[in-house]
Amino acid sequence: MKTSSRARALAALSFCIAPASLYAQSPVSQLEDIVVTPGRIAQSQAAALGDVTVIGREELAQAGQDSLAQVLSRHHGIQFADSGGPQTPTSVFLRGANANQTLVLVDGVRINSSTLGNVNWNALDPAMIERVEVLRGAASSLYGSDAIGGVVNIITRRDTGDRPLQAHGNFGVGSHGTFKTNAGVSGAQDGWNYAFSASLAGSDGYSATNPLAPFGAYHPDRDGYSQHGFSGSLGYRWRPGHHIGLTAYNSYIDGDYDNGEFSHPVHAITRQQAYTLTSTDQITDRWQSVLRFGLAKEMGDDRDPFYASTFGSLQRSYSWQNDLQLTEGQSLSLALERLEERARGSNVYQNDSRNTNSANLIWRGHFHRHHLQASVRNDNISGYGNQATGSLAYDYDIAPGWQLGLAGSTGFKAPTMSDLYGPWGSNPDLEPEKARNIEASVRYTSAEYEVGLTAYRNKVRNLIASDETYTMQNVDSATLQGVSLTASRSWGDTTVHGGYDYLDARNDDTDLRLIRRARHTYRIGAEHRLGRLALGAQYRFAGHRYDDAANTTRLGGYGLLDLTASYAFTSKVAVQVRWNNVLDKDYANAYGYNMPGSNVFVNLAVKM
Image 1: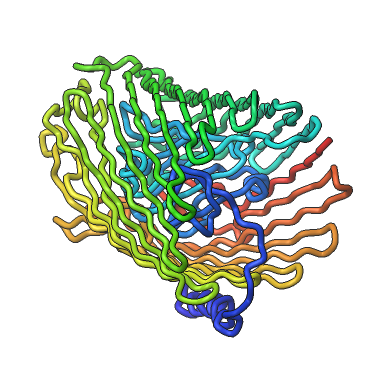
Image 2: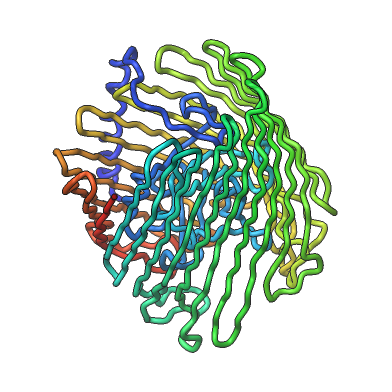
């Protein structure tokens, strides 16, 4: 992007921010989102401490043919890269942390692979998700291993409260021969609540690679996918304050990819499952008990004509959390957890199982203008030892609408079972990756304005990588530091929003930037409603990145313009249109792998 273009983006952002000080006394009137991730209890987003984003059902419904990773990347502090399409392996970088250093939950159950450490983003369908909560910064003192960059908590579609049965359906078609459809029912009555939905999707796709692809992977064909999934929840409130509930998520995708001229056709099948059984009981007015059993399974089947393999893991989790209301402004949570991990697949492991027992204590206090949260946790991993983590966060209400925040936290990531016990290059003596995160923020919120500025520094040591003999070792350390600026202004039927991210993510030993992380990212957008018609435009710019650790393979910066529109024929029927990359910008977020170019998706939504 030219300098003048960057100046225009900053000027537009300044337009959102500058008038905020003129309305410092405006009351907050909008309804607050309820979040559970920042403190492991339900609380308003305004009361939660930390850098938190909630991606709601309305935004997910407008995803079109975009993946969940793409939807996340439209928010501050998040970048992503895939390998030539939504069906391919995908990496999400939260505040510059490695892709396997962010903990991902589905309905509170971790789904990070125990064997490889990755997340099957390609198997997560936005159509079956109610909302996504993103907590940035090291959070192992709340959730244990993997939460170095933060936590992404995916909550599936469900229903609460009393209302009769409702049904919904969507059918959409788009570029590259893509179609997506889903349908579901939900309701709540006489103590019962239920929500069930199913989805089906497919695409002819586009060529995942181009002639620059590494290792001779290029093959000039179309790489498509087929996908289907199911999610459901069923609960019963058998007496006031006592509820038992079951949730299920099961998604499957069969995606093509390129592996050279002579290895064709090749495709990979990925299945992601997550199930929970939860009993929530209000024992007394001040004591709530939450018992939960979770089961997560993930499996990949790589079907190459010359080499085929399967890989995956199974995780069983048990937790008992007790939430105590000590006084009107103070609460305490004590959680005891157990995680059982089992390796699955065609690879032979020296040890294919491990267990983790954890104890977690969280205290929250609200005293007039002062808001605090402190947490400590210990994770005991079988055959590996104890890992203790902690955090302390403090927010101060400077003036009506204004809040200043400070926080410090530690995090860790245990080596994967492949790192420790796998058939190639494993090392049972590996130490966990560890992180120390500090951050400061200032926020302003009113009925018309929202402004946020967060600065952070996350020092990560004992990074695990292969040495010259291809054996896994604790060889590196990294520093992740940056600033995120967000702002929005709403008046009448119009909303304007913008943001800027500065990220300096580098290897401390080489002083070189970590791969596929842009240093500068700009976002600006606007939405306007004209009766039944809603229009939107978003522009995003990402600076250049490098695709190798030596910083010799450069990926150019790019700017994308997206347009959206929706029209409600009635309160029950609406049509939605999303046009991504209107100017057909040619760009890449991984060297040698293609992005979809300009693409359009049209969706018909029906409610009954």
